[in-house]
Length: 222
Ligand SMILES: [Zn+2]
Image 1 (cartoon, rainbow, N blue to C red):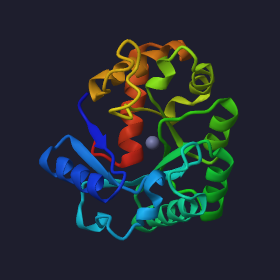
Image 2: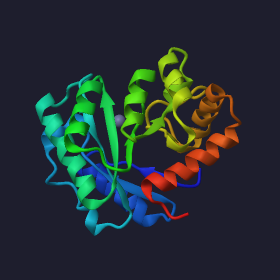
Image 3: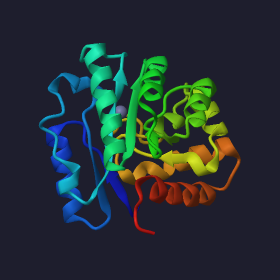
């Protein structure tokens, strides 16, 4: 792995991500508020305009699987972060779990930013088509290597090469054969290899496509 986008999920982690990016030429950061912590509000997040290595807003979105914050507050914070990404011309990183219809409703109401990533995609062909129809990039995690994840593999099979991304979701979701251990960027090639199997392509083709797409969606230098 040669380049990293490290993710903020609240005020502290967004600041940590920015510090890592400012200290390392191969790291970029996002600023966002995770739906779990939606009640925290956006006021304490660092201002991306003060930090030129911030490339995206998020992760933000809806998590109606855990419901750690009330659903109406989650929707409000998600809508505000969509607007923020558009206002600052940054990419948007979305977390959606157990809330596909509502995630798409909020996106449609606000208008989806030009550069939007559905992170750690969990769903099947129906959901991925709805995201692709709206112009989103789809990021596949280690779940694609899990035995029971036939729906995610089916979805990965229909993502066009120019909309495909791969990620860790570290420290979670380490791919097979490291499943259950803390995840790390060095394991991303196992994700790419699993996607290449689904698509019956060489791993190098997936590597080239996801490298290019990452540069495009986050506007990283070539
Ligand atoms: Zn997430």
